[in-house]
Length: 295
Image 1 (cartoon, rainbow, N blue to C red):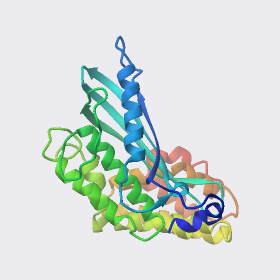
Image 2 (tube, helix red, strand yellow):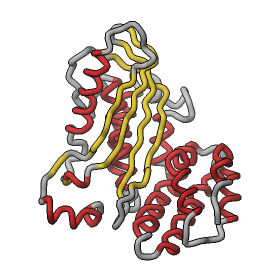
Image 3 (cartoon, helix red, strand yellow):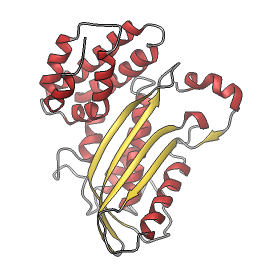
Image 4 (cartoon, rainbow, N blue to C red):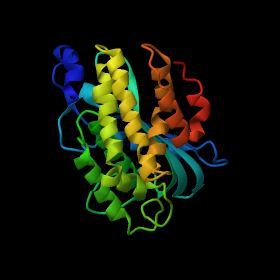
């Protein structure tokens, strides 16, 4: 489903196949004082190679189809080979017949600790837990690929999210945080469990409607596209009726708040007073931004 977005480019560039992700990985060690920083640079290079050169799905992705994303690792503690950090993961996808890329995923995982020996090989093995570093990075790689696929076809990312579930299940026997239910209600466990839950199926349905039926049609019918986007946002906010503090609503608005404000502040004009009222109810943390929508 991604192919139609790049048809004209492929006529020029031909059929060069590549891995799925075009990911920028950054390792920030500014909080670590009085130590040799070379290990962090080595880690950063190793992770960039690992994410971008691993064939995650076995599917053929042309160079222009690779998913733009980033992983920013902020190291807060370091002792010999032990790292304690957080990781901010973001992804976006191009919008048909435009130069605009829409944010799809934006998540800050604060429970990220791992061991790493400089120059060690990073190898993904889906059937075993060998390294929390590899498991976390692989998990988010499949989340990115799965959610991207969801924006092009209804539930199109299910297989990739199941790959992430396999990593989750394998990692649950480890002593690392973020993989289990009892630790937090906003960790990797709940992110994936909610994405695959029928209870929260409106979230993934909304991703498809918002991007494919909405943004991708903006070039030919701006008002009709905005109507579809409004419907998609309302479908996400319906989760509030099922679970007032639904984790996925926060995940959605962390990625989309600025885009929603921009979309509904520009033309063609629509009466979105009801939508704004709903947004203030379900995402009050963004009330100051909702207040800037001009309609």
